[in-house]
Image (cartoon, rainbow, N blue to C red; front, top):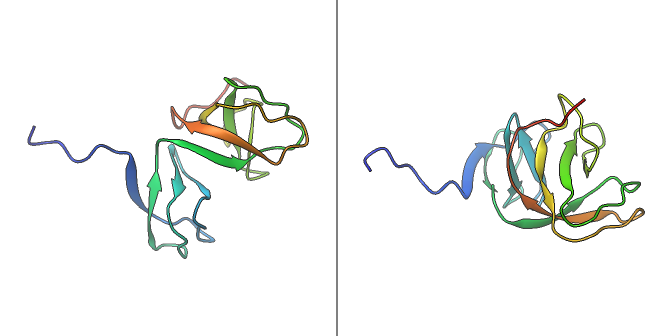
Length: 117
């Protein structure tokens, strides 16, 4: 195919305001991935758009494997509570993470969709 670009597992983007740290979730509109390196704002950074990553979660959430995980921009953490606007769907939990846990294993998945209000 002459119009094929790449598999899309890794995408190079400009690091958002404030820069990024290696392993940090990066949300640019509907494009979601995990930063492979630490970069200053505006610098090129490669983000992985597939795979399973340990990411910060809202401590109050008791998550079970299979729960959908959304990005809560206000807290800069994953949550199982769907919402609109600033809560895009990031992926799905692959392992339970009880209330009080600071992180959850997330399989990156369908990006940019928001949950019901």
